[in-house]
Amino acid sequence: MRGLASRILGRIPMTTTIAAMVVTAVVLSVGAVVIAVYVNLSANSDAVARSSQQSNIRTAATVLGGMGGIQVEWTEEGDVASIGTWVMPRFYNDDITDSIGRISGETAAIFAWNAETDSFEQVTTSMVDSDGNRIVQDPIPANGEIHTQILENGALFTETDVNGEHYYSVYQPITYLSGTDVLGLLYVGVSQDAITAVVTDTMNLLMIVAGIALAVMCVVSIFASRLIARPIPILSGVMGRIAQNEFDVEVPYTDRKNEVGDMARAVEVFRENGQKVAAMTEAEAAR
View (cartoon, rainbow, N blue to C red):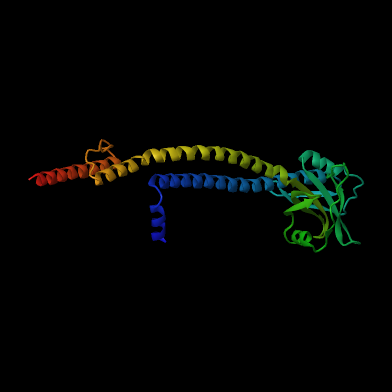
């Protein structure tokens, strides 16, 4: 493998090789920065979504707790510990969920247990479609995935699709005060588009900036690499002329203090030695 790489690189001019390596390094560096920013933004968006979910369920629980017969317990951190009632209230309109939606700026719904259908059915919601009609979510069956996770863990933080739109959702159980039976579910949803839009807009701006920076850095890198490596082919050409016994050629860059200067001074020694040998040969031929 190493021998193959050496043969391939040996066929490419050194200046081109250096420029290609510099451009590759620049592209990889910019790509690494873009990926790191994307990962960080994605992680932050998840944290923002979780924070919005917790804030909205606190708001919803506060509004719901203002109804008679609903008791809300809070944790020391101010989060909802539980919502309980002796009997699930009847909702004749959508005023409660509309109030939650107005305060939180997001969506809300309440599901009540229906023993006849053995599922939780939506009884009120703040969600409307493009025509202004209330969106009716599908019933949540008993012992289904959502119900099972609520029974095991309490409030469920998840993601749902409602009417073609994706939401970061919370299902907070409303339990019977003297037991653990779940009488209903308080739902709040945060539109994922609102959160991911920040990531998308930031990444679009970053890609534009990265593209411009990459183009500028590539041009500068190519120019700088060619400027730095330019003496090498020139010295190579001078050495070729010396090999053809053109000893009157001038060797450039001998005044430089770097590696190029060392190479140039070495070439100058070869030129001078060749010139001396040529002069000695001519003198012997003249005898």
